[in-house]
Length: 331
Image (cartoon, rainbow, N blue to C red; front, side, top):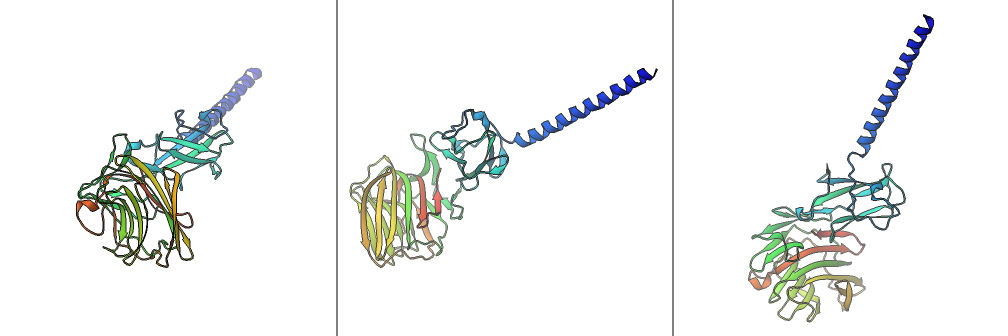
């Protein structure tokens, strides 16, 4: 009788222990699920320059407009990876040596610097445009407004860009304050395709009206020139490269204005290849003043079509002399 009660009591203890173990396992599973459920494993992502053999060792959390999603947005939806906010790490800790980036050509995530399994990347995507607004990706809020039917569309090769009809399309850019330091030098980078190069096509024109401290990027002038102008009041200092461009060809142009004691040295790159440089000795450096009449695709001079851009602008980025991006449109 005692032996039987002992067996029953022993079985009850074993049952309680088994129940407890099962509960612990279930709770642990829930915790693990909660930890990793938000992270999607995608074996089609382009993981390069890492030490991880299996792409299943990396987990992604996709945040679109700060809301977690199961997948990254599609290219045509108008989003860009926020490099400043996105990060990777191990065990929930940010590791600045593990760097995520977006390859826009393949629309895939590239992660460099991985040294451990179970790497997690929190990827934040921000809107580049909607029906009315062109968003400044620098975070400074210098957004643009689409005017006269200007829109984002794909060209014949499938590249997204701002399309201008060459008649009256333009983007109205927000006021640019005096805190932007143009005088100490800057870099401008843009990708564009001009369908027609007749007239004075504007990529951008920032100023306060005609001949009023304008900052210009002009293509065309009937001779396929590129002109990047700085105006001090109405005085002109500019850089031009004759026969620099072709119609219906996509170009990537970078121009650096490096401040000298008396002026700037300007270096121009075409499709990442250095092509020319000039030294402008002038005390009339770009003024650090508010500019209220700022456009993409339109001039501050006149309303005629010859001053409007006809084609696509795919990106436009400005960087100051300290390497900080202060205005950026991209797709």
